[in-house]
Length: 235
Ligand code: FPP
Image 1 (spheres, rainbow, N blue to C red):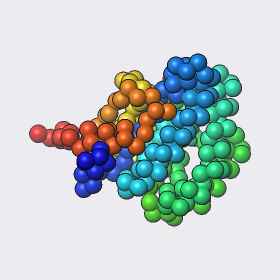
Image 2 (image 1 turned 120 degrees about the vertical axis):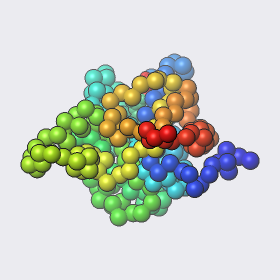
Image 3 (image 1 turned 135 degrees about the horizontal axis):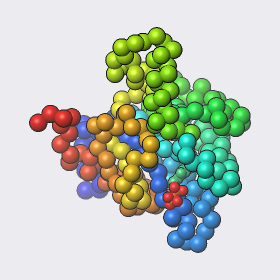
């Protein structure tokens, strides 16, 4: 039986979040510039988005660019931005064909005007689609998100907020919390990603580098998740 056939479709994670790590190391191993690693990372993004949509996963969150990533060398940052723009342009039709609805978590007002325009256009054209929600974390930092939510609560005059009030102020409002968080390239860190949302998320770390990650590796993560006993603090 193939790995995909072993997946119990009645116990799929609703929301899978991924820290896509290892593009730089993938390139370094081949003595190639880091941007070639990112380029191949985008190929993996295409594969995994299509596969997650096919499996009927509800939400896929990808950590594409953190608030800290601006500190990388200028040409790496601009290279990633160009890749993002190209992805949005070239993939929009495929996203629509696969009923994928695009969302962004993060402060995109700090991104260039043309990227903001592409993002808004893609979100607008896919907002009513009923398939996978592809939530791309861009200029995202979880501490910044939590502070933003606190400020929104103050602005709304909510003095005694419930968890729901707080969640309504996060970028992820309306989305279920991630059931499964995957991190590639064997780093055992959370890196300021979805700190509130992953309170009870199952974590899966693989040593596969993101450009080498594929449908089979995604199945392995889901199968591992399906073996876990999720107790949410109960016995
Ligand atoms: C991590 O590898 C990768 C990133 C920080 C950037 C990921 C961005 C993309 C794949 C492109 C744009 C995204 C989309 C959704 C189209 P790393 O550079 O941290 O690798 P290293 O730890 O081996 O150096």
